[in-house]
Length: 175
Image (cartoon, rainbow, N blue to C red):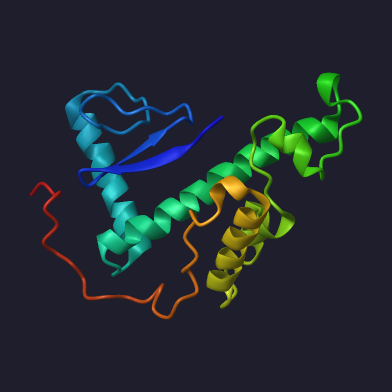
């Protein structure tokens, strides 16, 4: 199973995770509602995104968020396979859920304990969460050579969570 985040012409796309975009690039959520319902949904998404990013510039925010989305995705995929290995039924009988080769054989990224979403979530309110996320990215790259040099590792940098001047002239907003 592959997961790819692509940037093209300022647009972001996801592929390989069972969620698709339409030809027009509308959200991959698969909702087939009328355009007024989509506008309401999109407005709620923007409000949520604005709240999460606080005063961070949108161009910087997308890099922060996409790294976390990828981390959450591979952690969830890992957890699903981990549960199958623990159950040990069928092809997984006698499998070791802590053996990275069990995951690689199924084309699932190995996620070390210190990089698993549950660990990050448990430490989310710590003042060192930025370093914890950076360390998680380093650990994932260390144990998955295909990802070497790909993941963002700047969550602990000074000002990463600090506010920048609020942008009010969003060209993508409909007034």
